[in-house]
Image 1 (tube, rainbow, N blue to C red):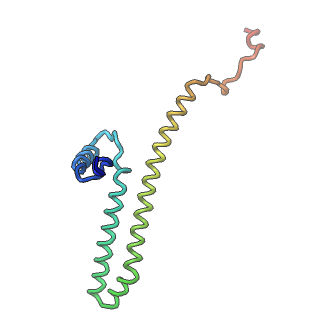
Image 2 (cartoon, rainbow, N blue to C red; image 1 turned 90 degrees about the horizontal axis):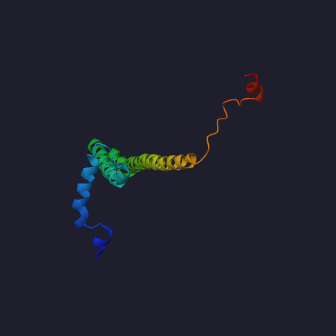
Amino acid sequence: MTVEEGNGTGWKTWPGKAAEFLRNLFDLQFRRLLTPRMLPTLFVMAIIASALWVLAYIGQGFTHSWSEGLVRLLLTGPLAFLTLVTCTRVALELCLAIFRLAVHASRMAGHTEDIAGGLPRITFWKPARRKDDDNEA
């Protein structure tokens, strides 16, 4: 057994993963959540988009003047890149936390139903009948 066959990360399994991704993408009943599995891909795409944007920003600075291009290359470009990547990471982690919270809440609801099913019903909001009421009737 090769490494590619053992962990499923080789090129041989890529078409199968692509087909599964497309099936899940067009699943109109939302039986399987796709977003948590897409987060690494989305993060890589955001890093690439941020890098391309910063390169265009720096290039535009050099078209105005050499000094503006150097300031963008050495100061504002790297800061903008780090800011964009950091904000993207925070947003994706927030998304992942929401999905994990939903999964845990669903599990807790199932456990609560199991526990509550075995308990007797207590109606503490209804007043108890007094013996005097029974005797008067």
